Each structure stands twice: as C-alpha cells, then as structure tokens.
Image 1: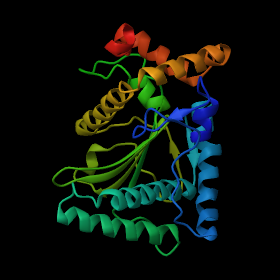
Image 2: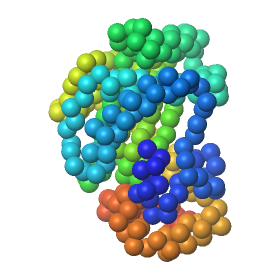
Image 3: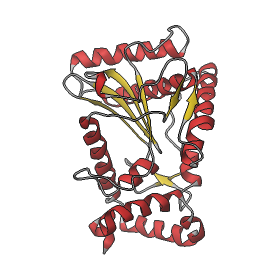
Image 4: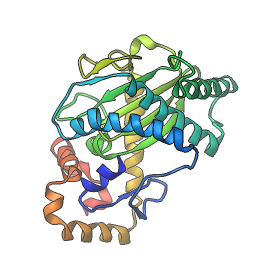
Length: 274
C-alpha cells in the first residue's frame, strides 16, 4: 500500500497524521512475527495485491473473485491493528465487557490465522471496495472525501455502548473486523465468506452510523492536514513544481480534482485558499 502511495503521488513521499510536518517513505512496522508467520502473512498479502488491490486501483476491474486467502488477509489486518492499538492505549475507551471481548477476538483471530480454527467465529470480517464519488445527496459531506477514500491509510478501534470494530482504511478499500456486532442485518454485501466469493457483485448497504463515523474520520484528516506548517507547505510546493509532469498524471491529482469538481474552492482549507 505504501509503495503504491509513493509511486502514485505527486512528490514521491507521504506523511503520517501524528507527525504531519515530516515526510516519510515507508509505513509503520512492528517486529512481532517469526519468519514462518511473516511468510504466511506475505502470501495472503500478495494474493490480495495481485487479485484485488492493483486491479481495483488501476481501474481494470470492479468485480473480484476470491478464495480463502481474502479472509485470512482481512483477519491478519484486524489482528495486527487491534494488537497495535491495545498496546498503545490499553483500549481505555472500551467498557470492561468490550475489552474482554477484544481479548477473545484477538485469540480467535490468531487461532484462525495459524490454522487451528476453521473460521473467525462471530468476529466476522467485512470489506468494501471504493471508487471516487462523483455525486452525492449526503448532508455535510466532507470536502476532502475523495482524497480520504482514495489516498489515505488509517487504522482505528471504534466502539459504542454495545458495538466495537477494528477499522482499517486502505486506498480504495474499507476493511472492518468486528469485535462485537450489534445489528448484522444492517451490513449487506460486505461480509467476506470463508472459502470463496465475489467482491463487487452486489449492492452494498451500510448503517447510517458507520457513514457518519467515516465522514468524521475524513474531517479529522482534513483538520490534521491544515496543521502542516508554512515551511512544509513550501516544501510540498517545490516537490510538485519539480515533478509537474508526474503530478498531472498522479493519483494525488486525480483525487484532488474529484473533490474540486464536487466542492469547488471549498475542497481546500481557508488558510490554503489565500
């Protein structure tokens, strides 16, 4: 994902939200896995990249046949992200009941990844392929929505009183790993099947609460980007001017142009308009 973000950007760099004023060239890493597990994860990641991610981001396909590697890949994302955020924060925003459920989800996911369980149990995985938004009827749609959907990578572990899930936002893709799902009937066409299936073959239906959550994440990304210093803005400008031909063909320009078509000058923050 991060290699693709660099190759398709206008500058050859990207930035973390936590350190927005510093350019980086690679994603975050944790040294958790033995070589055998690294090989397992790498195999599922390769299948996903070749059969879903690259055909989706290149526009060569909108439907994707998958086998059991997709569920393994999605569970590996949920397991890593939940473990990472638990180590960072202790899931302090969770109730005690949901914290215990998170521990059970981590254990079940790890057993499934190691082949000791045939499925993730009730801790199901959902995946939603995305494309640029060209029109909408949603009130208060964030004016950076296409840049968020097409160009961002983000992880979160979210909860309400009764529901909790691992949120993995990849370019063109949402992946959701449920720790506790309250109304499964509100999620239609997104659940990953155990053995095989077809992505993009049906209409998707999501709860309104998830749409509001996703839009809040997009607004948060915009707020973070507005804190980029003037010095770093100048660095970005110089990078774009240096690679002006690359910028015009980049995915960064494509996503920005889509937002401008939808929102006009509102696609940019007030400070950047001036």
